[in-house]
Length: 515
Image (cartoon, rainbow, N blue to C red; front, side, top):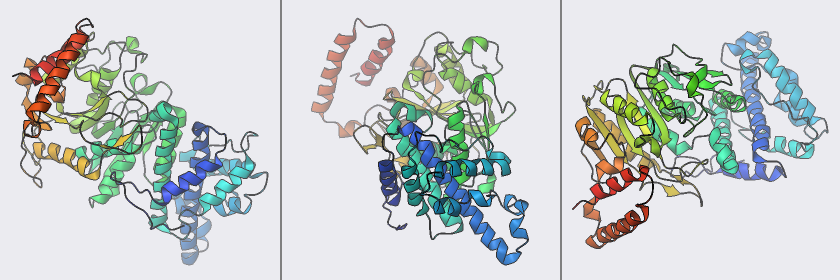
């Protein structure tokens, strides 16, 4: 397989051999649902990874000291999993055509878990089930055997990590709404990482899914010449199956981490209660109504107000602020409704957070970025201290960025940011912070604007970027503006009998087209 024949898409992803590999693997799936098949394929890719890493270290130790080559501790000390003989990929590949191959794989997974404490309960062990076609299984082993066949060390790790990540994204797309439960689109994650720049310190995700935030954080450090050991990874996930995917995803990247699971979730059983993180990156589930908020009315985390029992959005925001270090920053993806909602206590909490100066930036995203929903979403950048080190004192101000016009369709239903667009968004935030190696910040009509808190108060504490950044009128003809005004007049007439929630939207448009 030609590893070098890869072409980059605008999102920095490789669409060469990974795409071809997935297409071939998907053909082997037959009648299996993607939700079942992903565990079959990803489990085997993981097995291939740890076996390759073991064999590389085993070869090196044999050359140095044959006796040490059979010492399990020699491998664990080098962050390499111990793989017993019966679990090594060469053994499975040699027996791939046997009708007992499913049992052999299950036995291999059990043997690996037995010898590696950190993998206990993580690996899939249902390859022997009658419903799983053993011919397909053997062919899948043959296919995966070609990945990084002639590569060694870090190169092999990188290739297998890329394949694992690519497969996760493709399975998320195939599963639609269910896919969004374990996978945040790569371009969204990259926006968060490039804005926050997690060079060193503690990185936390309270609803970490399959671990994409952590993978991209590690990549960021590598790409900017930092040391991987300078960041420490912490996370929590309530879905056991998704937690297993995260553990494998990080292991296949060689990333040390402390990822906790319990079925109660971060609200009700905060596994990392005392953690104060330097960076928090999170994409919580949108608008969760059954989050058990009625049992948490007196919780210490509700500094800015008690979240409503019917929506967890402001529970997530306050949980995240609670876990920030004194100079920590967070990037949180939430549905756009959180920017204006006044249901029960949400408006008061938002007012308190803005007045408390923990909201640094709000970024609206284009539609169709997510696998799981067409709901419009935004990124909240939260900061404990807006007097940024190495930068500008932005206390009393909020940066608004409107990125709804960015992104390009990669298929009929989904949009991605290009590398240039990610840089455009991140650079605006970094300029606003006053980072020394970028240009001086300036408002850009239609894209970004820095606004003081008194101005936000005059807008009834709404955080909709479009309300503040306005239009770049130099690029709009008089005819186009006139048409937009006409369209809005028609829309306003149609909405006059709808509930009061629409009133704020009408007000936004009226202010936008004032004059």
